[in-house]
Image (cartoon, rainbow, N blue to C red; front, side, top):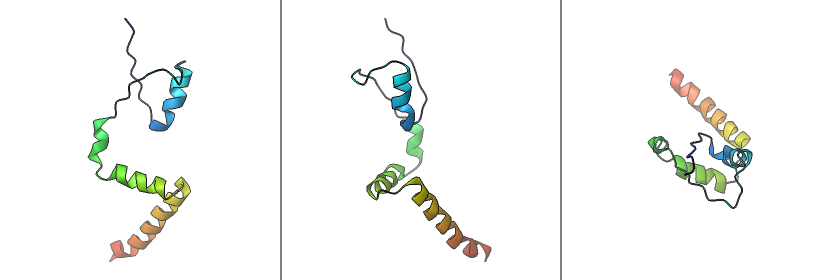
Length: 77
C-alpha cells in the first residue's frame, strides 16, 4: 500500500514541488482545494478578470495605491 502525502503549497508552487518529489508530469495526482478560500466572495471572478485583462502584479499594485490615495481624503473628513 502506498503512503498518502499531504502538501501545503500555493498554486504557483505545485509544479515545482511535484518535480522535486520526483513525480512526473504524466503521473496522476489528486488536488484538494481548501474550502476556506470560499470565504472571500468574488475572488475567483476577480482573478479571472485580472488574467483576462493581462494585468501584471505591478499593474495591480499601482491600481491599489491609486485607490488608496483617492480614498484617503474621504476618510479624513
